[in-house]
Length: 268
Image (tube, rainbow, N blue to C red):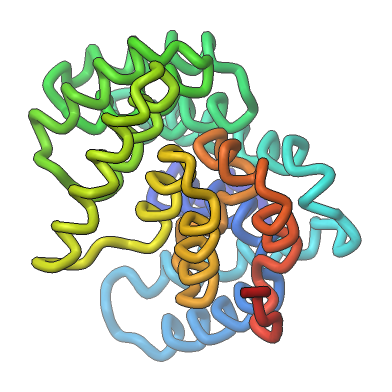
């Protein structure tokens, strides 16, 4: 079965792209999920059931294409490249989709092609100049380049539009630290702590802000909690440049080897 069988259905193409990378981290979990998902779709009577069946079948085919011996801790850049072509296909099918264009830029970002990613993001921004997701994405890409002043400017622009949501604050903390303002990074960490008293703040956001603030022991504690909670963002631990500062910690690098291993108990 190939993508052509779907007749250009981007609801199918884009999830396939995401699962290509996710599969490399969570083999058994994804296989089990797809079995359950396919069975539920076949039993369902909703209009989208046929799409669901096709998606499950195609994802199972992709699983079969992967080398089970692939070491994602060593070959993670090669793994990310697998994500690029189906996302390009999705963007060709629907060139006016800001999300597909953005996802293509994020593929380049994860492959460390920062200038190319920013150029594509600039074109995507033309579709909706005021969409704040572009601002936080730009902050991540500029941070990847170590262009901290621009990263900080973009992060602050995102915060002005989206409010002080945890992910934005975490990226802002990293940009503050990179720009030579550890006090600013600590202020963002303190804000996350204060916000956690009123609502949910994901552990990975605390981890990023803590590492940015130079508090690696605290950062690892939060990273370990994100692992134990099976936070979805952890699937990008080995591939997203935003986690580079985290992986400088040998304990975090060790944790990376066990993503998807539910039997592993992280070291304290």
